[in-house]
Amino acid sequence: MYKLFDLIEKHGEHEEVVVCYNKHVGLKAIIAVHNTTLGPALGGTRMWNYTSDEDALIDVLRLSKGMTYKAAVAGLNLGGGKAVIIGNPKTQKTEALFRAFGQYVHSMNGRYITAEDVGTDVRNMEWVYTETPWVTGISRALGGSGDPSPFTAHGVFMGMKASVKEKFNADSLKGMRVAVQGLGHVGYHLLAHLVGDGAEVVVTDLDGEKVKKAESEFNVKVAATDKILFSECEVLAPCALGAILNDETIPKVKAKIICGGANNQLAETRHGQVLKELGILYAPDYVVNAGGLMNVFVELETYSKKRALSKTETIFDNATAVFQISKEENIPTNVAADRLAERRIEQIARLRAIHTGQNHRTFGTLKVENR
Ligand code: NAD
Image 1 (cartoon, rainbow, N blue to C red):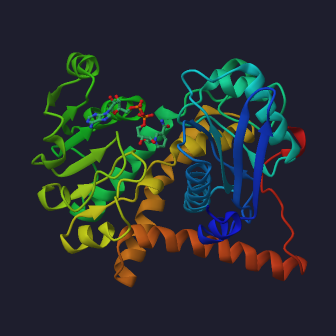
Image 2 (image 1 turned 180 degrees about the horizontal axis):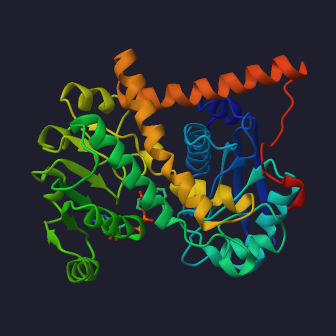
């Protein structure tokens, strides 16, 4: 039997953990708010058939902390939060379940703002929206910003430009060989940017249809799914799975730069150090894949595609700042990204303490009272 509060304490200093239960609709969910120093906690709702309540709790604690860091490095006035719904997303989704969940989100009065994530989609968020305005990623028709993945891809491309500048002092990807693993929402949108900038692209996906489509639409080569990570190339762009950079794969990687959209690419934190020792520049995943989050942030203000795109362009500077810290302090880039996040949060917390004599929270530029 795990000890609930010991487990919460072990996984970081979360501000709030809310257990949501409604037996009539079968709702079992947990919302975790990690840190709201910079603004309201924003993070998606994951629906997953967790094998235990403990696994669900660990996941939501870990993911919400990750959102705090991602928003902080992205320069957004947002904190970190996340929700998990325990259940099978293929068979257990109902309108009533998501509306009951929406009532819990509403009861948090804007301290937590939700969005879609693995196992949930726009339709589910629209059910949540019937109970609370504290939800993003809803359809364009309802005033939302729609699919975030083109913005994620644009941000990854900006991170890649910053990486080639850092590694090769190059201003474009012209003539560089880029290997893309995964042609889903992010990977596919990334192709247009890469090809448009003159890169020589090699792709793969488990889904042969996506590969065929990429081949016919763009001038790309194809690699086998078990070979792509080890392609002879300047840049490797993982856009499929997490934990692909591990003890087994890293020694075989030939790329000089790793920069892609996939979450949690390093199997363990220590793999950042391994990459550094090999002279491979790793653009930390949460720094370069923040474009989707930036897009929903703009949705919380007054949505403008132009503004969302110009925000994603800041990822070039964010990645450059991370590389700078990594060099100055002789630390791996993944550790440098965490430091950048922690410093921003500390500075803003201190600023508040000085100016107000208390830890007063403004929600930055967000018109939270209008939602
Ligand atoms: P997706 O499900 O649309 O695409 C993933 C693709 O990867 C699929 O086409 C799948 O067939 C392929 N794939 C899976 N395993 C593979 C393998 N072993 N080899 C080759 N291809 C494989 O997902 P997505 O929305 O494109 O997201 C991709 C990654 O980026 C995920 O890790 C996601 O968490 C992360 N991410 C996405 C966004 C976003 O805006 N969609 C934002 C931030 C981070």
